[in-house]
Length: 206
Image (tube, rainbow, N blue to C red):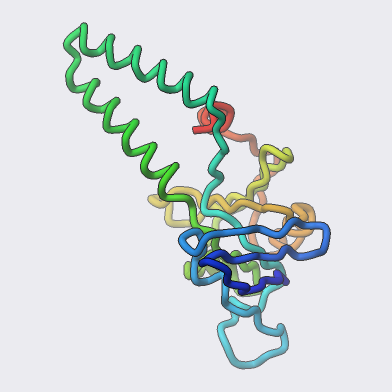
């Protein structure tokens, strides 16, 4: 069961981990989803949302935002400039507009709109991420990609195939315990590997 404190100091929250060995996260108000402050219910409690009767519970970012050094920004700027020049010289105005749009959107979204940290709950009813509740009957399979410190993810594939797979950052949770529990309810895809494109994006910190 995740511990959390609501110590508010200049709109900054301090979020504790599951045990004393986990570091305390310092998050701004804009980085926290309101589900973080929902209390877990006791497993024997008859009333209340069954999705809050947590077997596992932790706080995770919507996606990982990799810190970028000055060198990274200089190299990215240089590549961006070369691309703009080449597209302008060749008269590829559509591609030039797309490149500029991508760069602006990426900078605004990834650097000025940080991912929110949300509460993840795994219960006997299903999985709850923020306010999204997914019963096990709607989940087709799951797999865990675990290569710390670079990769610690729980992937959920629902039966609604037109939706993308749900990716949940495991943070400091024990993957073997979560795998053992989920295997009681849904099928695990063993030996699943990270997509090459995802690996490249992760290495490039995009």
